[in-house]
Every structure is written in structure tokens, then in C-alpha cells.
Image (cartoon, rainbow, N blue to C red; front, side, top):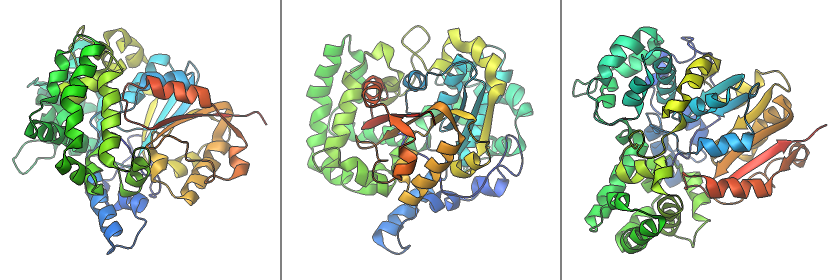
Length: 432
């Protein structure tokens, strides 16, 4: 569950500038993330929990984004000439947006590992020889020559800081880039969390990969009801998930845990059960690559089922033609928007970042969004709980300049194949 990206740290930058992601920032564990997460005294129980989360979040969290870009593009009515600002995450969303030929995509993130991943993805699109090579690098598991392809085609074009990130060696002596020789999507906090979920299910006698044998939605629901659902009633699982740290692997900080638990019956196990049920049962496996990653631990092969938009052969030419329209910024989103001219952004993609924020941060963010938004601009975001978190927290004078699209928001939530959020929200800028 990629519930993501803090907005309160204070650094800005430009694409490929050394001041943008300096080497000390890349490896300074937790400090900048902590500025966005810390809300309690350091030695309090809540404060210690926040600091543990910030430490874990300072490395790679999301090897892939866990929001559905197809739904996002429809909600934004994304098309030629559009200028959008998005949180970067794993970068699948950015490349998917290029299929609609927008004029400009500015992707912002505080996590230095995500910045390195996104910059590497852009250079891979530019310089890997073919669409098949791109799929083998980012879509296939156990392709043991991907690191050689990196050395030959990508590394010579990569900025020094990102290159240092991917070529740094672990305690085992392996370069970080060699994760693409195995299965990149089983790495990062999210990958490790999913792996732990599989181990726990197997401990109770259930193999989640068994869902992949389903031939229909009825089969999928039967497997969930008979095999997976009972696991969430186990006392050990209910106890474990009652601890906030249990969901750090999903990128859920302590404050967001409190919001998430309000959408269930008071237990986190019931919330997770409901979200997994939607992922397992509401979409045919042939249409949902999120379910493939969650249950099969890989993407489908070409022709086997749907792939992320940037890995579909039909989209390759458009993405490669438009890749120079992307800017990757290691920056605070509020300050990044402050550097933009008024009325110059048509769409904003906030993922679930606002779930992290204080009222002051929300008002600062929406002040900049409102200032930089063009007439008719669209803002989309997700929340752990169902309702929009803005009413009562963002000033009326700001919200009165926007229209909340309730019906469209509910429709987008229902069609979001990632299936893990409580709410999807669409706001549209009113004419003055």
C-alpha cells in the first residue's frame, strides 16, 4: 500500500543538478523524511514510533507505484498541452501519463531512492535499444543480464548521484543495480512487506499464490472467502496488526494508521481484510497487474494479462517520444509550487500525501495549489479513510474556489485496480 510522501522538508532542486540530490542527502538516513513525519516528542512512545518510521522510509519504499494511473488519467482528463505536477513514487505513473502527450510533467519526491529510480527509468526509456529490452529490465523477473544492460546503455547517461546510488555495493559486495537481475519488485519496504504477508499466510497453511489458478471472478472470490479471509481472524494476526509498526512496510506512518483504522470496525485486521478482498475479487486477474504483484509476486508476461501502461508495447513509441517532457525534482512540493507562476498547472496528483499533514501544512499546500492552478485545473488524491480530509481543515476561503466532484470520485475509487484506498477525491478549480 503505497501511502506515501511527506511534504514538509526543506530542499529544492532541478533535474540533473548536483545541488538537487547531493550525495550526503542520498545516504542521510531519515533526516529529511523525519521533518515531515515528526509530530511528537522524541522520547515519547509516539515520537519513537515516528522516528523508526522515518528511518525505514529513508531507503527504497515503493519499487512500483500502487495507484492506478488509468483511473488518474481519466479523472484528470489528461491530454495534449496539459501541464501537471505529481508526486513521483516509483515512476510508473509518470511514464503512463506520457501516453497522453502532456506538455509537461514535473515529478516531485523527497525520497532520494525514488529520485534515483525515476531518473534511471527515464534514461532506460531513452537508451535501451528496444521495447523488449525495456520490458525485460522493468517487467520480467530473473533476467540475469539486466545489470549488464544498465552498464552498457543506461549508466553512461545517468547523473553522477543516481549512478552512485545504483552502483553502491552492499555488505555482500553486490552492486545495488543487480536487484534487476533477480526480481526488483520483491525489494523495497513494500516488496518485503508483501513477502512477509506470504510467509504469514503460509504459516497458517495458505499459499496466496493459489489465487492465480482462478479462471473467473467466482473462482477468485471462492479462494478469498475459503482460504484468505479466515487468516485475518487469527488472534496472532489481529494482535500483530494492532501495532502501528506492523504497517510501516506499506509506507503508513503512525498518524495515517490512526486514519486508516477509522474505516473499519475498530481493528486493523478487518480493514486489511476488506482492502485485500477488493484486490482479490473485484477485478479479473487478466486486467489487474496489481493483483499479479500481490499474489504471484511478478508482472504477467506480454499477452498473458494487462501490464502497466509504460510496459505495454503499444505505448512504447509515445512514451519514448515524450520522455523529454518530464522533470524529476528532489524537493518539497509546497516550495516547488511556490517557484511556479500563477495559473500554470492544469493537474495535480497528490497520491495520499495529505494523510501525513498537519492543518498548517494542508493550508500552505492548498494556497500554492490554488495560486498555481489554471481555470478548470484538477486535483486528485487518495485517502486511507473514505471521506475527503479537506473540509474543516483547509480554510473555507480556499475550498470555496474548488468544486468537489463527489460522483466522479466514487466512480474512480470503485474502478481503481490497486484496491487499497478508502477514498479517491477529485477537485476542480472554479472560474473566478
